[in-house]
Image 1 (cartoon, rainbow, N blue to C red):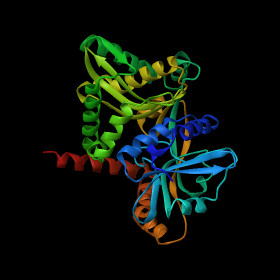
Image 2 (cartoon, one colour):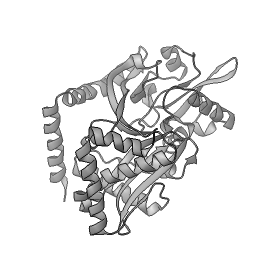
Image 3 (cartoon, rainbow, N blue to C red):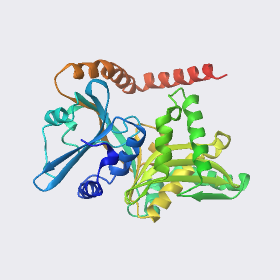
Image 4 (cartoon, rainbow, N blue to C red):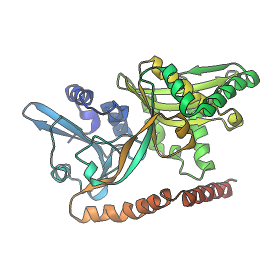
Length: 354
């Protein structure tokens, strides 16, 4: 059992080898660099290293809370979770939890190939993806077939933005720290405007994003993309990139330019730039959204739930998480109720504004 920064380079390289041999997409959230960054801002982060006769055979990154209640590393912000195991290695989940001194292990974006923990899932969710494996032109052809009005309208708005606000410029990998601060300010305002919890009001998330923005590993590179008009940023996105997957994470735009749909323009330019870099998949993340319906080419399952072993800790996990999770699931499964809940949150947000 190690803190993430205690992993040796040999162990990190073995971790990367196991991910390279997986049939799952090479999501950067599953790389050792992400776990290391979480460990720098979350003192409870640990990595269980599993050994067999040939050496390190698996890794289970996690966070340990009070009374042994565990959670996937970065739970709440991580969009891909699970263990990294040698093919054919199937430890007993409860024995693994016991070895980690965990009574439970909660997850909310468990990777579909995680056969060890999928049986403990309480819900299946959908994460939406953009496939640009065959290049951006092929992707645009897909959009012309499935969303012709969307593509035509978005490209027209991009041209109008250039005419009315100044030359449009896109930077796929922006290094200016001021642009990242601007994005976080926009995102915080969006959270408050929609009545959602402001993630950037939590210090550890702000510090985590700052660390990842400086991470330049081949399979986990912090990537800030910015759309400019007339030299002014109008939309931006921060995510993580491997050689084959761009994990979309924090998108936002300047509300003053909302009529141009700069966020949609930004995503098209991100898809174009990613394809040019050899990235074949953009993971838009879990949860329905109108913009995802317009942009997506497919979807993949992810899972939410918790592996537990008998005892008081498992009961405490159930009492602390299950009632709220079931209530959220009940609302999500009823579109009219979900719409009412969203309107209520926005109304509450307006009342809280000074």
